[in-house]
Figure 1 (cartoon, each protein chain N blue to C red):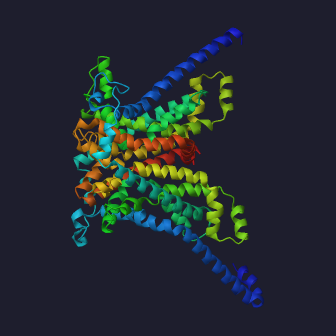
Figure 2: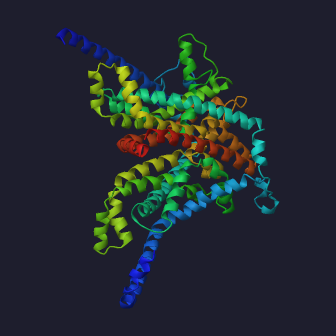
Length: 319
Length: 283
């Protein structure tokens, strides 16, 4: 403590001018660095603030107000209503219904997608060399296509009277159900379609994960007499766990927000059996209930953050 | 191991392989089949699409559905709108995200940490949260039902910044330092030295951004209020909901127009896709 000023004191009379100029050069350099850094960052930052960061905050503020579309030209008519929107949400039957539907979509859809993706990735990684690229590209195809287009096609495939699925069932003598018009089957149909569309994405990620597992581990396991299944259980699965978790969370975050599928295929019906949280928010927005819609979107946000936190917990435990 | 045993093992392997191929082939049919059915059915007359038992190949080939699409609906315009928005959004992301990505990876300046944390945080925010304020903002700016309104909110994104920063960090500092010693300015270094090295990352980001924009649905659905600003997915979805099921052929032809350009691009660039997904997914 006392040593520092004592050490600099003798130097001061000698180098006072050069010290000051060194300081100002340093300051000028720092200023220049700051200017360069922000010159590169400014275009992004401005757009980011205006269209993303500020809206995130505004949305939170909105969720505590009774803002309606009609109030936009007259901001003074807006009142803070505290947690009213949130308490109203949890007594709103449609919101509760949509939450249950969304949870079912996630809880069934995510494991289903992961299992299919893992099976496909394992199959493609098991020494099949022929047609491997063909399978990989084929399975990935639905991922890159518009959900709207896919939903339009599937609506026809699942049409009870003239759809391809029931037509094929009729050929083998089965009277197919009415899929999207059945309150019990509509949501499972959408889940199946989501798994069909998204597993290719996870498959590619899992394949990369599988290829990163060193081959000697399998050789050693074979020498120890482990069967294929034992190798999968005791070598592949544990080493792939971080990748699987990552895939699960990414898929879960996507599925928590599902919207286009019911919008195009069922309009949330029949009897709200496929109404999702995002769809409910969209409807409330359409009714002009902006404050209420914002509150519902924050509930969705919290669910997504919770899912991500769970992931980091799991991953942290591993490494 | 005797030769007999070895032969047995080999035979079992061959059977297992055959079973595996069969399962994969069925899977491929289930995944790709709907697209083939869509494409083939769009070339059938209306009556044949609903025939029982279903036909696979069209018995009568016809382009009527596509002709209808372009005469009764304004599909060339929707196509143009989709392409314009997607190109603008892609160019914006490539430029702005690589600029800020370079700053975050290689420059030292105050506020950098906060900026990066904000970007990371934004990755977790669902679109629905910003959706309502964005709409209020865009309508207050008088930009609803305009190209600017469709493009501006997507001109930058946290994912692009994250991707570019991660990639740029792998570029050696010596290279940039050498250019600095030669007296090149920062922007010159960026455009002449750094950006050419970023080609793989730019390709990945460009493909993913273009695709996301081409397939984007919710925002154009609410911002485009008259038909002349519809993008392809919006036009297809609204037409699909508005119609009863009499217009199968027309809708399938519409789906073909939405899907095929993307499929062509995907098939040409699929190597970039796979690499991009695998690396961004695992980092």
